[in-house]
Length: 156
Image (cartoon, rainbow, N blue to C red; front, top):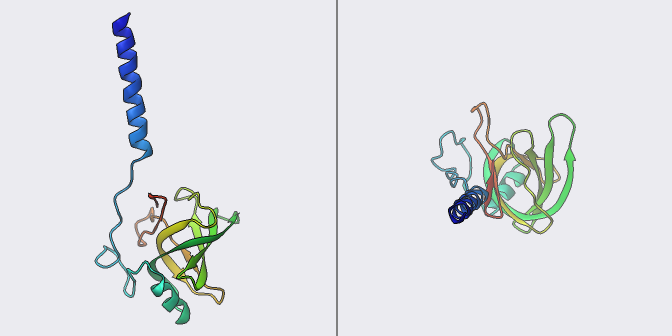
């Protein structure tokens, strides 16, 4: 009887340890843009918002960049075609950009207003601040991958 209890306890402890390891596993840190395989010409490794503000002022599009900021507002998902999660990110305290994250390729990022995120993706200019998409890996391997880091977890 005692050995059965010990075996049951050991199995339960191993299961809990395995579940905790899976829960707190973090993907390896993505490579910085400089020197990253497949990095685009003109891409920026800055995560402080300056590269985003510069791209906006120059009306640039299709710019791979890293940036960071606070979530200004979470918007309803875009359900036309491929579903996308959407939120407004305040960058560098001066502007907002729409983040559009493909839910058919990458998991939802459970952000709320006020949360801090760091991300890499492709910036597309518009007069309202622009948008950042490709915040996920490319299953076909033809496009540089992006990601969103939130609360210590990497979503790609």
